[in-house]
Image (cartoon, rainbow, N blue to C red):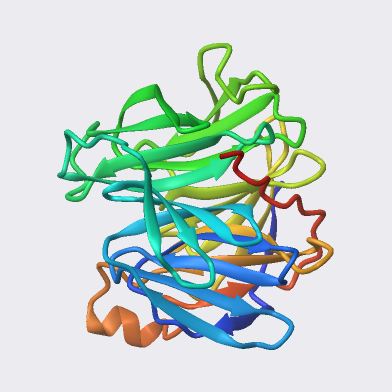
Length: 295
C-alpha cells in the first residue's frame, strides 16, 4: 500500500515560472540550476548564500549538464550549446533536429558514462512528433522515435538501466543500457503503467538505492517507485503541475522539485500561488548527483 504524505516542505524560490523544468545541482558551488522553458530563462540559486540570479536566454532551453567549473552544456530548441558560466556566452556545439524548427528540447539527463540523453517534442505538443537522442563527444544518435512528450530520462546508479516516458501515455519505460557508452542494448519494456490514473508521469531521478522519484504532472505529487516498479510512497506538493525533482544539498540528501502554471486560468492560479515555484520536500533522501558531460 502506498504511503501518502502531506506537504510539509518549503518554497526554496518563488520564481513564478510558466514552465519550470530541468533542475540540476552543482555540488562544487552548492547551486541549483533550472529553466523557465517558455520564459526563455535559466535560473540559478546558491544554497549557501541564498543569492538568486535569472539569466535571459535567446531561445527556449530545457536541460543543463555540467562540463567543468567554467562550462555547461545546454539543450535548446536550436540544438546543443556550450555556456560559459562567467560570461553567459553560448557557443554552438551540435545540431539536434535542425530540420524540425517546429520542435524543441524537453527532458534530458547525463548518463554515468558522460553521455547525454535528450528528448525533443513539438512546440504544439503534436502526437508522436518527438524523439530521444544519445549524445557522446558531440555525436548525436537517435535511439527512440515517435514520442509525444519525452520525460523521466534517468539512469540506475551503475548505468546499466535507463528510464523514460511519453507523458501522454504515462507509462514508465525501462531499457538495458551499456554502462560504458550509455547506449541502449535492448528493447524498452513497461515498468509502470499509470495511464488510467489522474495526471501523467513527468521528470524523474534515481537515488543511490535505485528507487525512482517521479514528479506527477497534473496530480500535484512526487511518487517514489521501487526498482521493480512498485509505488512505495506519494508526497503531495502545493502545485498541481510538478515537473521534475532533483537531489540537492552538499550531501545530496534533500529533494527539490520544479513546478509550472502553464495552462492554468486565473482561478486555478489563485488557488495554488506556489505554482511555478521551486519547492523542497520535507524528506531525507540518498541522492546521486548528475554526472558531468564529457565533451
